[in-house]
Length: 94
Picture 1 (cartoon, rainbow, N blue to C red):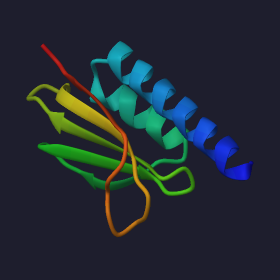
Picture 2: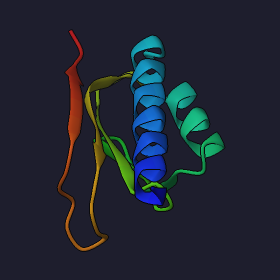
Picture 3: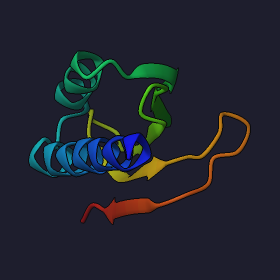
């Protein structure tokens, strides 16, 4: 049963992140929310941002636009730190 609770918590956080990203077109705001949810930046530069929440095994990938926004993103769960596979949710900004 603990595995089911962890999966539900993981799914809830992924949905929360996806909704938050869709509501915040400015990456600076997204960055602050990810930090508040204990995500750790693995890469955060002008082209791409990758944030990881190791306890929940979730990562967020954002491809940046000029001007502080993002072009698209992916929110994903992964099974182990060596391989980033699993469920993906994504969006392409227009």
